Amino acid sequence: MPSSELDVVIACNFPRDETLGSSRVPLRLIAELSKMGVAVSAIFADDLPSVPPGRLDHLTAPFRMASVLATKARRAHVVDIAGFDAWAYARFARHRRAGQAVVSRSNGLWYRALDADGESQSGQVRRLASRVFQKHVFCRWERTSITYSHFALFGSRPDRDDVVGVGWKSASETAVIHPGVDEFFLSPVPLEARDGVAFAGTFFRRKGSDVLAAAMSRVMRDRPNLTLTLFGAGVPAPLVISEFEPAIRNRVKVVEALPATELARQLGRHAVFLFPTRYEGFGIVVLEAMRAGLAVVTTPTGAGNDIVVHDENGLLVPIGAVDETAAAVARLVDDSPLRIRLARAAIKDAEGRSWAKAASALTDAYAQARRLAGSRRR
Image (cartoon, rainbow, N blue to C red; front, side, top):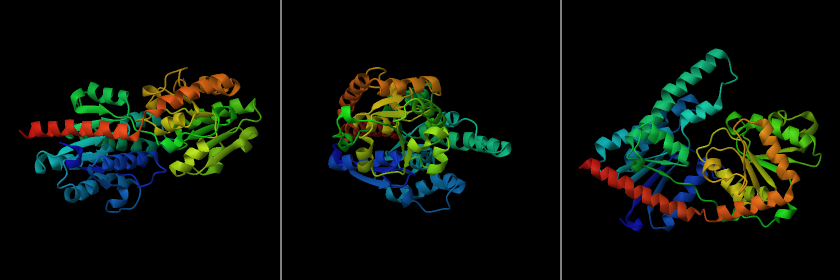
């Protein structure tokens, strides 16, 4: 079927907010699919029946999503649903929408994220209740969403390999599609004129907040002119800054979430991008930092696994390793020729990763999903 005849609904329980990487990806793909002539509709959290935020929101999301899709996706050829919210509609569509392809889009596997989060700092009873709830509700929903869908999309190879390895899907029922990167992330600031270290993302354990604070405290302690900027921390600035050693706190800056164009402008002034995450489904900020010309230090998960090649277009450090992380950042700060060589390679590698290319790969995945849906119908 030509793209001009394809009708797709992309649904996710995220705000329609491009300052969030999780929302920026579907927003960009929707725009590119439209350029290709695909009739594409979007459903975001804002479009679902509202409930009070918190646990009730999560518990009812699959049902609220299914109720909206039951009406708005009636004529769609493909329904692409993010995360563990797909299972309720996938079950409905199997019985009521013969031939319609349901695609489960993973932004990261919940059970892997849960492991990366580690133990909560809350009370013992509350911690145990939260872990049981997430493992026996969200993780089961995730598995059902993937198994009941005709096709599953992943942002990184290890996630796809995990799912195929445990038998939730065969390889032919899956695809890995990396996101694109906006061209405006290419910075006009010369690499030789850059300074400072940047981090982008929520400041919590899964993103390596503890490693970030410990490693940068150590590196900045010996380099009195070095600065650190944290973009979109999602935590009040005083709480973030308090995690760093007192002597360097006046050189730590916290910037609230920014529109992508402004993030690109500010990010492009920095020399090094530090992202010591414990787990990512992909981590689009790594790709954006590469396109912006920052030398990247990250871990072998998500984009760090699939895109970053150690000592060629960035530096990889073990997950949770403060010593190695501090040493890698110090190496780049102290060795400008090395930093510039890695940054130039990163810019070049990110150059070909367009949203148009990602959208084209997505239409190929949709075609395979439709073939699978048609074969099951027969």
